[in-house]
Length: 205
Image (spheres, rainbow, N blue to C red):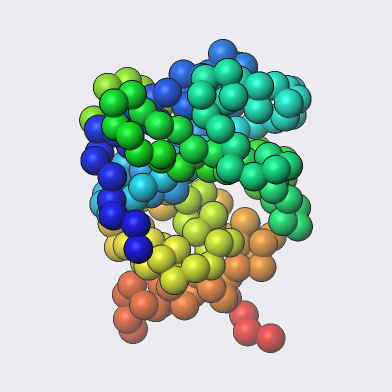
């Protein structure tokens, strides 16, 4: 298992990636482990995860900006496609750190991703030294349910515990239904709040 990198190096990587892509003028938001802290769920992470809108720019422009800034794709071809999901996996070595940190960039091509970017929230990210946009808690929950790994399930549980009184359950219900995730959400809710009825209605087949 990878050891967590120093926070300063991780934040420098985020800062560099953000400022590299910002001139493209595309909507962009932090997701993944770094975004969790904004919603009061803190855990160690070694990666920078970004969602970027590509409706009005060419993916080649994104790649050109990254390479010019010393952010190198980890795969050839650089864009990985899994079903309807497209993403770029890259690495960057912050100055004087002698470590390669991972940057994963999800290309927003689905209606859900576009909606998530519209709902992004600007925040001064702790220790980043500048303001970035992060995905809403609801959209992080949906992305975590879509990913479906054990760590993602744990993240959903912790996000629910920390944010249950301020979540937009109507919005959640819409996308949980659209992505066929309602039963997964109900399971995570029951793990977070044993014996409590979920606010999302779920009719079993």
